[in-house]
Length: 287
Image (tube, rainbow, N blue to C red; front, side):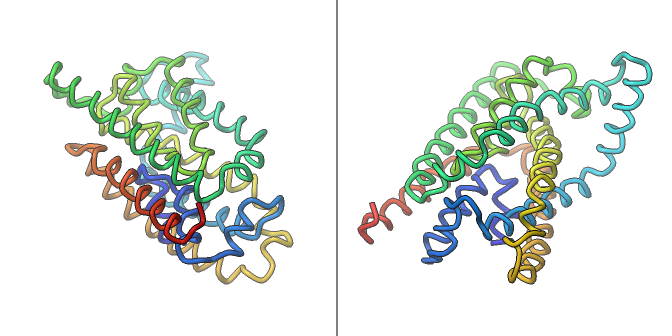
């Protein structure tokens, strides 16, 4: 599960959806039942995996985050935004608010309602369709523009995205609270529709993931340290280590992949795996 989390959190194929479908596939019934209960040992386990994933992102983009943090304090001190990194850090803050508030208020309701195999299958297929539509739009726009830019991610993003569009991208992240909808996928597609290319949209998504995932992890830390974590802290440590390593290797790969590749393979994967899991459930008589 640590390996699955580290890969699927950053690949646009829904880590939450896979955290539902993998236990279902292998018949881990206690895990399946715990995901829809009010108190869950598996949620405590997932908290640690998410913190490990966010830590890997923070390490990989450490130089960028150093510039963003300096940009935040310099903009506050000057009371104006005058550089790309100053604007980018405020765009990230704006985009973080909608998903943060929604998760704080409705995470439990959404988790208990949608953390079920059939629901995850349906929304994973929908996620695949969203990726394919976003890919088609990006290809059509690239043919029209035929433009190559040497601008940095901060400069290009600051120029292409307004505070309002950052809010829309952040609001789109709310859908990722539903098992099957990928947070990175929905933000990459939202970034593409906002005018970013694949590379800048992916980097904006990964930068945006860091505070969202880290904040959610620390908010749920009492679950990890409390009774829900009793008896499984060895498994938690093992899963977190594997998740962190997998996440670091994933973002290292994807940061290069999106320079000249597309979302299409991930869209096809989501639809394909949904159909396979649906067939599996029908054969077993579960649906």
